[in-house]
Each structure stands twice: as C-alpha cells, then as structure tokens.
Image 1 (cartoon, rainbow, N blue to C red):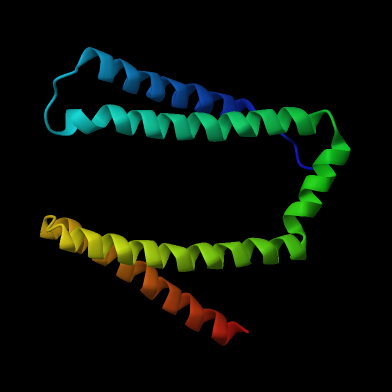
Image 2: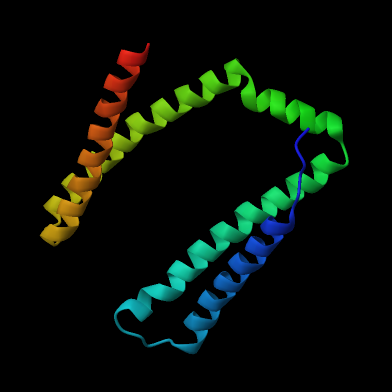
Length: 145
C-alpha cells in the first residue's frame, strides 16, 4: 500500500500561502505602479492560490486516507479503473474540441478589435502548437494500435 506522507505538501502549501500573501501586500503597498510591477501582484495571487489550494487538498486527502485503508484501496482502484479512464479521456476530448472553438473565437475577436499584432500572433502560435500536437499524437497512436 502507498505510504501517504504530507510533509512536502505542507511545505508547498506554506510557500503558496506566502506567495499569495505577498501579492496582497504588493497590491496594498504599491497602488500606483508601472510596467511589470502592475501585473506582478496579481500573478503572485494566482500562482500562490493555485499552489496553496492544490497542496492543501493533497494534505487533507492524505490525512483522510491515512486513517482509513479501505478508502485508500478504493481510491487506487478508482484511479486505475478502465471505465473511469475512458470517461476522463472522453471529457478531455470534448474539452479539447471546445478549446479549439474558444481559441478561434478569441483570435477572430482580437483581430476585429485591432489588437497589437504580436498578441494575435501569440494566439495563432499557441493554436497551431495545439493542433500540430494533436496531429502528432494521432499519428503516433495510430501506429501503435
């Protein structure tokens, strides 16, 4: 059975909370900023909240599982269950299809709004990267199966 240790997750939770708090302090202490300092506090808040939430969730899961081995066993079975994997893959495929539509709509909207060309080209590059990676994996899996 897997050994559920929470030490590193607690450390990362604290680091995430500190980054989150630093973002809040930066917003309050520097109201009139320019350039990167205008964006940095919000990046700190987003990244800090993500790190904090993810790792705190792992800590709570490990605490719950450590005291109940039956739940731990069921979680392992659920994670490796073929039906659940199929459902997850189908959901990812639908989300991918939706993402392509959203990216296309955003690119068109930004082009019509006459946003700077480098921003539109960044969206186009990301869109093409996603499409080409899909083509690559499609070919790879067709050769394997």
